[in-house]
Image (cartoon, rainbow, N blue to C red; front, side, top):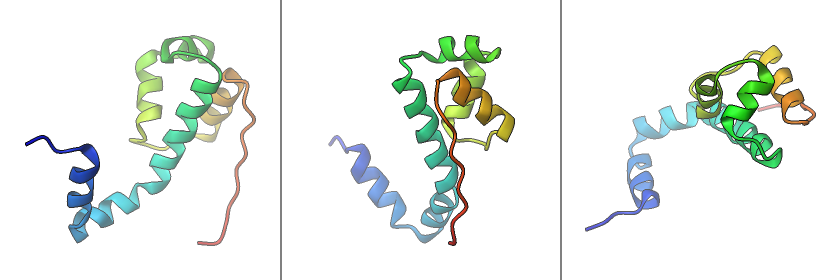
Length: 93
């Protein structure tokens, strides 16, 4: 029986501890989606973006994984390399 990713995710998120951990990473996942979107809109591969930023493809992959938050300086370099304009807003929770 083949399960879809959606059904597996739904089942896992029904566990309160898993849901809490997943929700705690929402900001990282949202930023990762933004970074990937900017790179794709710029028509760049990870390797091409890395070259523009003076880093490695594996560093770009780590940024896009959402595993950790990049520094503001890195975000500014990323924006420049993708011809994007960063917008940072702080909103009430």
